[in-house]
Length: 252
View (spheres, rainbow, N blue to C red):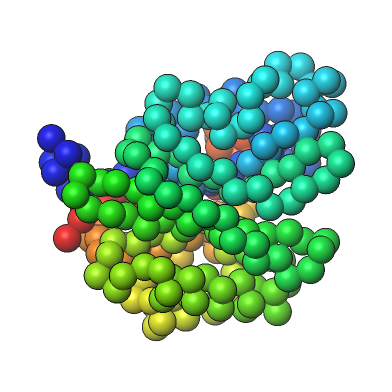
């Protein structure tokens, strides 16, 4: 049974804007949970996940009691990991991975370039039957110098900890409108961007109402791409300022 399931893998990546709509007008975490489930994916890579927020818990109606990653995973994704990146007096937020398969290890690496923009690399090992899948959920900085350092940290981590023949997925918000990160990930790690395979260029994902910038990516190694889709416009544009990406992969 495990071998059959592991042959094909569906996953999504989404910057959820801490559970609020564009310009923080509405709390959308309940709608977010509903539409993530409709994607019917095995893995979800999430950025800007609110782990705790004392003020929202008191003042925002229907704010979930549990952290957002637990609320979103519920009984659909049986395992999850959270990497706390930005910490402040009233709470914290970071990256998360939700998984239908067992997460056997998880580590969050601090790659912040300065104290005003805290970032991390969430690295999980996931058991796909007898295969071990390495997943990294990333959210790079807004400034190019910081992104270069974060990309170097990502590359060094993968080269040090991930066997070259192991299946690998790196996904998240790269804030990389010039695609400099993409060229290095292909050259240094042998990764392929799933939308570049399908359409020739990474997908446009920001803003979600009418995407212009190619900020969010899914890179894979050891898989063939079967189908990739951008989820923008309604209802996704009501949930976050980023579009969601999903892909179906087949393990080689």
